[in-house]
Image 1 (cartoon, rainbow, N blue to C red):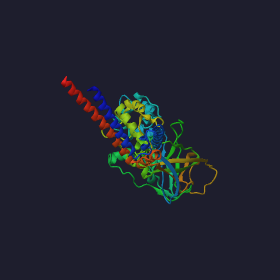
Image 2: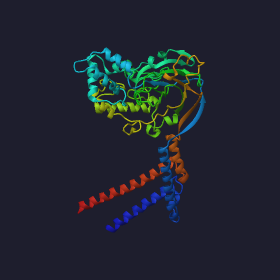
Image 3: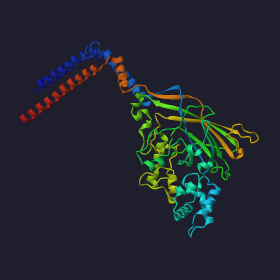
Image 4: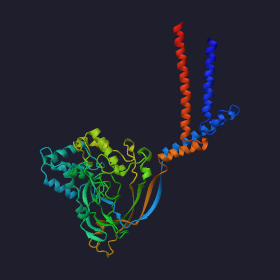
Length: 487
């Protein structure tokens, strides 16, 4: 019986092998029919294995290139009849003005544990709530808070009283060669750097207080200009009568950002020098994204669409994302937010006891590893150049804007867009998912003449072999059970 059983198994294995070779000879696969021929199989097996591994290597390289850099940039130049004017931020000195402090100290009442002399000494530390550059002592800040509470004042109100107003900072203003009231152009806002005068900008902090979260417009009307060059834009005379007591805290500065920028972020600016005229030219490079690149996943694009929005900001920018990350860190570590941040519902501003904790929770833009904030796909990159000219008080000005100004105690600021030309960079996808599928099919077709039908044929062949082997194993198990029963 045993020899006969071995003979049957051998015959069945031979049938399976012949059946597989028969199917292989009819497969739509270049070179497959050669594998069925025993006389030339020795040549075709290593050749096809070599080509297969070569095709797989090309596929891996192609997919890796797609994953590493699925998009590329194209640069274009366009001319515009009108452009949105940038956001202009002019910030006063961080140190409170002397006469402001004297007026404030003369108007308030003092509790028994605080006298005027002590209050005058520690009052400059109140600016630490708005600027991280101001040194402070926690005990002094706590005493200042008690003094304000005794007079039914909060920190924000007191800071606004002590800070120079936009009417005091800005003496004269022109918009596109027309004299205008500076109060019509600028508005005092709390920015990421404290109290500043803002033109054509937005404050998320104020809008959240007025409208609530989720009710903010994405693209409100903005100031636009059809005039370009140094004779256009904003012309401002800035008051510089404040005596510089501290080089870091006693100077005014200016910063420009894209139109309708949220000023809740920290902005790098340029110091305004007394007795000079400073020109600030604004450039913008737009980044746009095509539909092909937009259709890629955020991980492949490595950027986020500006209209995606955030938890509080209605539009996405990396800076806005960093602010929200800093807010989340401060709430998590200190259970409060800094005075310059938008205040979420149910969260309080940090008091004096938590100020050091809040400063520790700050997120530096140079070390954003703790925050997942990818760059924006479609956004303006803001560039500006500055020039400074010394004002000569001996020369009589012809322009009436300069007349009557004490040149040693002002800074003239010109901010303008120099050219109608705008550089736009578009992000394009090298190929979409469908293109990638076609690329992979082309590679295998080049080496093997493969198609989807070929894959179906190979799957059918694999199924045929697997099912035959499985049937053989089941039959062998069944025979063993019968033999065991008989014994």
